[in-house]
Image 1 (cartoon, rainbow, N blue to C red):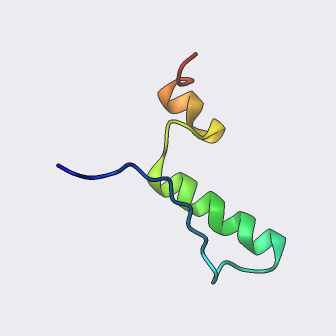
Image 2: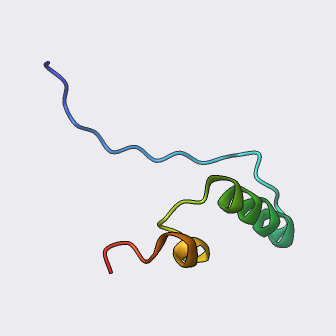
Length: 50
């Protein structure tokens, strides 16, 4: 294919500056997407790699 692997990082520059508002936003996204890699969802999915 001719592609080289790369590692990228992204930041959301519009994230709220206020810590509590940022945490509320983060929690709403965690609950929306239900990733098995977040501790909040281990009860639902089980602990990954555990």
